[in-house]
Image 1: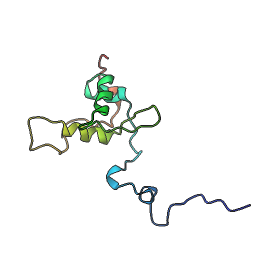
Image 2: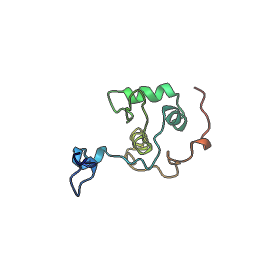
Image 3: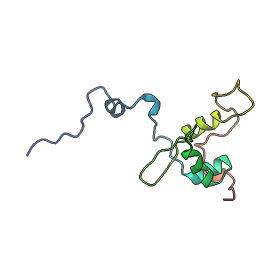
Image 4: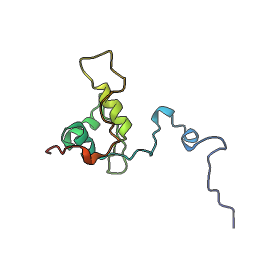
Length: 114
């Protein structure tokens, strides 16, 4: 019986590098992915708006498509939200201080009527 090859990634490379995925398109699963309900609750908008933001052609809310599911990575949502800031161009693209992280416990967030 032929010997099975378990890993085809070249030595010294991770799977992303071997697949040619740029570092700007990588993310970690250290933070749990968020559903549209979770993102809507955090942004105080209806779930339908979250899906609409993700479908926009101009400046869409970054999402991941896994079959029919569309989860969101917390740091992508934070970056997108930061880019939406209006009225303070000096702070555009900088972290929001004093604003709770999207990765924190969602149970503490008030529910929004949807």
